[in-house]
Image (cartoon, rainbow, N blue to C red; front, top):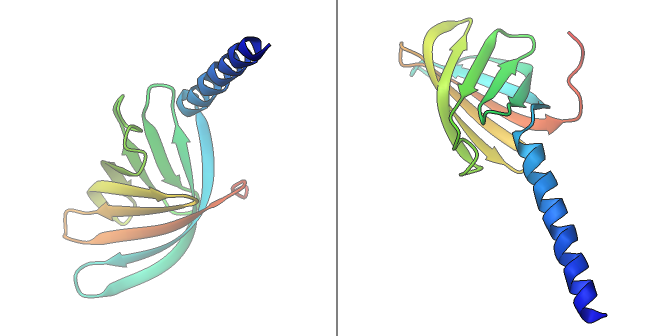
Length: 135
């Protein structure tokens, strides 16, 4: 009886682990509410708020994009989520071209830094939210 229980527990564990991995690699999107600040080295130039969506795709890449403001950060590569906390990628924002981006995840929050060719940085501080409002 004890052996049967251990085997059943083992099979259930395998099932749950395989389903957890499947949710990481399927296309899914999560909504965040963000406050952002732009600084060009002379202090904060402007502040705003935006909703952002983080979508993780089957090939291991992800895109984080704004709802109201035109910006995004592309994170890529098959080993993207091995660290599960810090990522780098390429980004774009309507207020500046040619940006790199870095993303730090912490529980239900996320910090995104977009760097531009002029030495400026836009920082997004985001908190996970259920569903993004319709545009």
